[in-house]
Length: 394
Image (cartoon, rainbow, N blue to C red; front, side, top):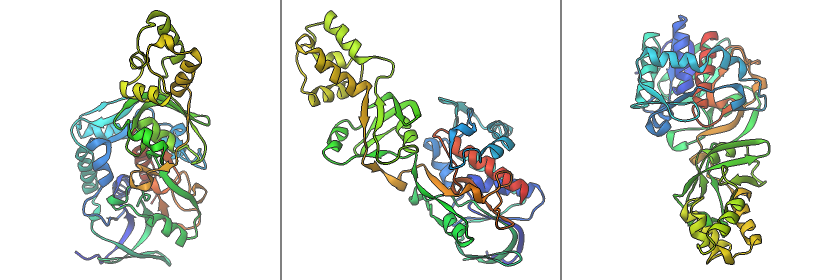
């Protein structure tokens, strides 16, 4: 079906932010067109949370978002809160639950959230066209959008095409290219919420432990997280690792405590007094996963009865658990990154409306903006909040 009309608002990208923006724009009586190059809308929603969509977080607050301007997100998050989105979910009787740390998931399927948003778009008389590629965007008195379905003009253009994370889902750098076309500054983007990788010989240690998971305290600079880590064939993953990856400078060491609730040296010396004839690996496996215990004992060349091991060696072993400094070689990159750090400079955009300061009627929302949330529903909340605000103002 070809495009052949003028619209008040055209929104590029039918993901979380774009859908929310379209809903609010339509509700305000604006003739709204939503375009996406994918076969289906909201693919990131569909795969998120293991297919159950971690749609927001009860603890969403500005401190949980990274940006060159940490104050930028405050206005949008205040205008449309996590409680506002939860209210919408409850209006549709979608069953949900809190998993951990305020993370809210659908009980059944992420499709419940997608269907809710599409239903809201339908109620707001939004025109949605999928499998539509954007060929060119230009501006005269209004915006002209050339697509594979034809050309359309609009008074307001909203860019909600996300960042380049997970390219197999169709993610591109389109938003950045368009921003540069309109002379807007970009904060250098990079993969965030992404597993850490290592090269040989260090990688051999992690590969041998692939599948082992444990709770840990991870710290880089002044930022720390207490969540699980997972050893993989490429290095380290798990919630705590993904979180710290957004803060890591790609050159310095990260502090790991793989037994945050126990002082391993005190534990080992106590066991040395109480159970002197027990093997060191068996004792250590009481405190950490046995495969990790065995590997650490092997690495430190420790075996036999704990009574025969000097305290200095026990201290080195304990430090490898409680006070370990690890320097990765890199990350898995955009291929597996959940989001993109950086993006369109917030100095270019009004925090109250999401409109470009240089170009009236041009808006940027969602992941393409230099606002990145923690793991656990925060990035969806930014999508809802920024999309809502733009939809109120287009």
